[in-house]
Length: 174
Image 1 (cartoon, one colour):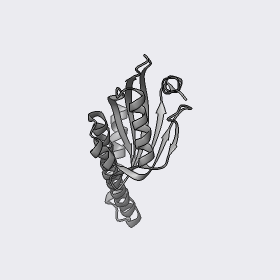
Image 2 (tube, one colour; image 1 turned 45 degrees about the horizontal axis):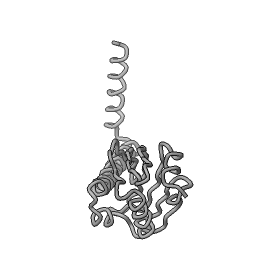
Image 3 (cartoon, helix red, strand yellow; image 1 turned 120 degrees about the vertical axis):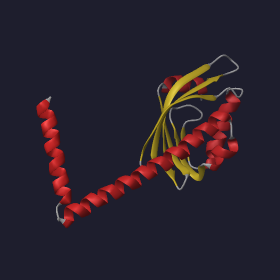
Image 4 (cartoon, one colour; image 1 turned 180 degrees about the vertical axis):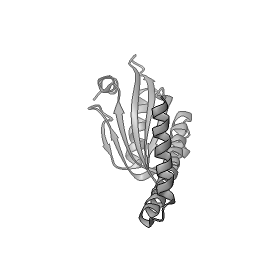
C-alpha cells in the first residue's frame, strides 16, 4: 500500500514538474487537451439534455416538444422484420411509424422507464423500457438501447437496439 502511495506521489511530482517546465510543446499540448476536454463535456451535456427532454416529452405525450427536437431529415433505424422495422428518412416517416404503433396498441404504448442516459460527444445512448398491450391480448415488455445523434439541439439520427427482437417482431407482426 505504501509503495502504491509513493509511486502515485512521484507521478504527481513528475507531472507538476513537467507542466511547469518551459517546454512550449508540453504546455501547448496540455492546454489543447484541456480545451478539447471542456468542449467535449459541453457537447455531452447539450446532447444529453436534448435527449432527456425528448424522452421526457415522449413519456408525457408532449407531442409538440418531442416533434420540435427531431430534425426534419432524421435518419431513424428501427430493428427487426416487423411492419414498423427499417430505416425512416424523415420526421414525417417517424411520426407515421409511431402513430401506427399507437393505433396497433389502442394507445397503450408507453415509455415505461428511462433507466440510463449517457453521452459520448454528440451521441447519447439510453437504456429504456417500453410496454404496450394489444386489444387481442398481445403484450410487449422490452428493454431497448437507443442511440441518438444530436446536432444543434436536434436529434438527427436514432438507432434502436432491442433486447428481444423476436418478442417485438411477434408483437408488431408483418
